[in-house]
Length: 192
Image (tube, helix red, strand yellow):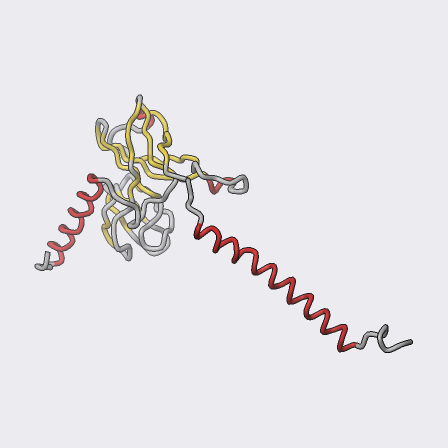
């Protein structure tokens, strides 16, 4: 056998190592390139109004769990495309629609009608029925969705999760300021 045809063990392992490194680089590179391209791509998805059902499904003075389908789903989303929210019907056409997530670490809160409290099972966060923080580690009250009533249906602005980064309507901004002032007064803070 000639030396050019015969492959040494060292040469074989070197070629195998280069091939495995190329495969690993490709597997890591494709998602990274996709992430960089997506960062420069301007999404055309804008929040849209989604029906939670007829206003008559939410009796005055009660809080009920409702779900809507996220308008920006992918075929593989499955049940995760169903977004739950708590709907509180105050009276008439006054509602509050809360995100189900605790403002501490995002665990789903539960509504307890007997005590009129939302409670988080993960770390003991408690919220009053109007969504304001009652006790525990959450730094603020529950996040609220924008809502409107159209032809007897309750609609929420879906396609985004309400957070501190979400622009607030004048109604929500006013509520936030009242919560901050109330906390400052109860803590004896004279700086506000």
